[in-house]
Structure formats: structure tokens, C-alpha cells
Amino acid sequence: MKLIIAVVQDKDSARLSDALVKADFRATKLASTGGFLKAGNTTFLIGIEDDKVADLMAIIKKNCESREQLVAPISPMGGNADSYVPYPVEVQVGGATVFTLPVDQFEQF
Image 1 (cartoon, rainbow, N blue to C red):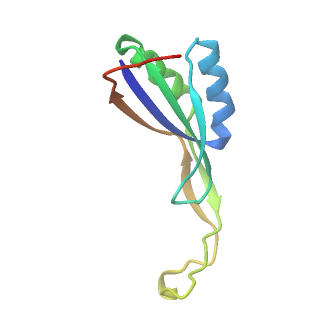
Image 2 (cartoon, one colour):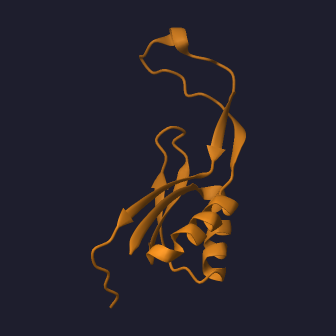
Image 3 (cartoon, rainbow, N blue to C red):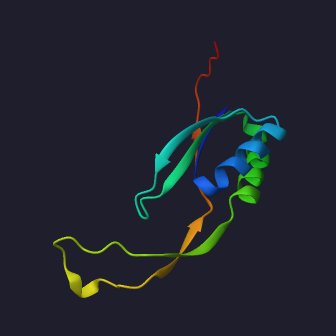
């Protein structure tokens, strides 16, 4: 058995959640915040049998595609202003960060 921890952008959360339900995967959703853009994320916790991991990864990959987005940089507060860029910067957002962990025991009450 595995525990899959998938951190996805909020924009992808509903689509992934619907796809998981349709494929009969049970998941727990947690609100989280990304460190780089300080933007909202959703973290999914999914307990799954070893032989279904590839199917789950395919669903996550299909529903959480990365994309380019313009973001306004945060101005430096008391920091070095030499490297500050005052105009929007294009960054890659979305996609998913997925961790797969072994599970020794799983109980559901």
C-alpha cells in the first residue's frame, strides 16, 4: 500500500477531485499555500494499493498540467533592490508535486 501526497494549484483542484471520484479513488483534500508565489494550493492525501499507483499518476498528470502565467513580483522590503524587477514576470505554474510513500498499515473506522 502507498500514500500519495499530491500538491496541486487551486485552479486544478476541482478538476482533479472530479476525476478521482469518477475513477473511484478516495482522497482527503487539505488547503495549503505555496511558498514561491504565496498562492493557494490543494494537497490531496490518497491511500492506494500498489498496483493502482500508475493509474492514479496518469489521472493526476492529465488533470494538473503546468502553464505559463504572468505574475507581479513582490517588492523588496528592506532587502537588496538591485535585483528587483518592477514588471510582471512569466513563470510556470500548475502541474503537481507528488510524493509516494510506503504505508505499513492502513485502518479505516
